[in-house]
Length: 280
Image (cartoon, rainbow, N blue to C red; front, top):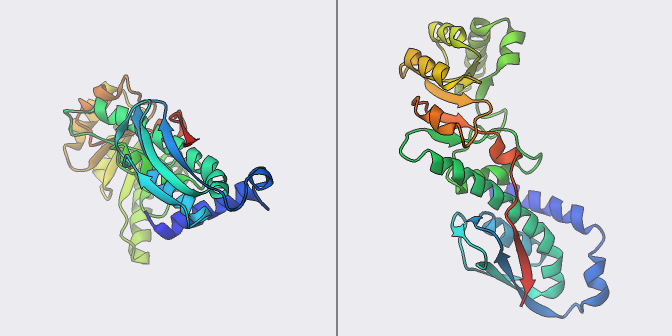
């Protein structure tokens, strides 16, 4: 991840939370007081966000030191300690909630991602995230997916072209959408992968006939329809299944030999992992 972008994100979050001062701590904790606190894990899952949390503490107070006990991406259980932070008590308290918010959210995403990844063991199909992320928190949420074993889809609108149903309809159909897109890239000297959504088998056939894309998304296809589509595509293009795929159904899509399965729920239907920061 780009450290400059991370620092800016954290600084904005600190400003949002602290305002003109942490008056709870300023009112009753001496400025000179120092102490320690450790991250207590209360739920089994995948730990994610330790490096980011360390950055939070240091952005709040460069004098705070961190001893990492468990690295990002590792399995944790109730009673484990993730790290120990030591320094100004005021600084520790100021950073506490922001660090925990990040850790709990990222760990929840990493844990959910790992469930999907584990469900695909034995298959070549990879789990992708989507753009269904929290505004201004996408960088961290996508990093959490990666720590959970998933693969990041495009980061935003700028690094890959995805022609979805509305693009196709507004452009006047599949052929127009593909041809206009390739002309656009040529005229601007850009080299971006093109993915296009297919809503049914007939659209898959038309996309194959038209060509000029890198990946075909099979949107809301049944496993039976997916298998038919994969056979038609026959390795000419990458394939991606999407649309309401759950832990209970994901294996049936992997059995069709799609290259990727994208799951929006990894980042927008996720439960945070339970943990707390305790003074010692």
